Image (tube, rainbow, N blue to C red; front, top):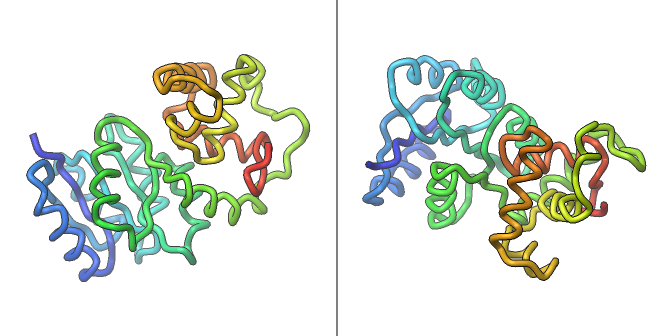
Length: 223
């Protein structure tokens, strides 16, 4: 069954471009489009969607608030935030609102398609290079942190799990973490799963947000 995608952007030309890329894929189908967040929420009431490509700055209802409302619904579609370099700070709000990741609007088509497939399969999309750039920009707006993070459940992590969490928060993939810690990817995946369970987090996107909010990781990726 094809992945049902919804495009939400107030720029018609951008939606047209994305639709052309997705229409060429045998496993994807654009089932809906909206020009703002309010219209997107209305359409979702009657249309089954798997993945929403969500712009941030739009009239009436912006993408961050729309994402928050969509993700608060039972069995919601996955949301991928679309951002630009000068609006990166909005991506953080989108991730906190429940988005499963973010992409730059000028992302190469292959990366966009891979991101949609990853999110649909249950993974979160946090591209390492983009994550580090994004976090370096918004981290000054976050608490400076203390020697001991304030999230009570972080103390439940083992030393290895804490190491893995720090690397996830810096935007490293499971493969990169495996190489850094000399572990198998399967072991890293197991550690990530335990971290999510112990901290009651949905995915690795929320790991990134929590690590920066608590000061476990700070600007520049230093722990």
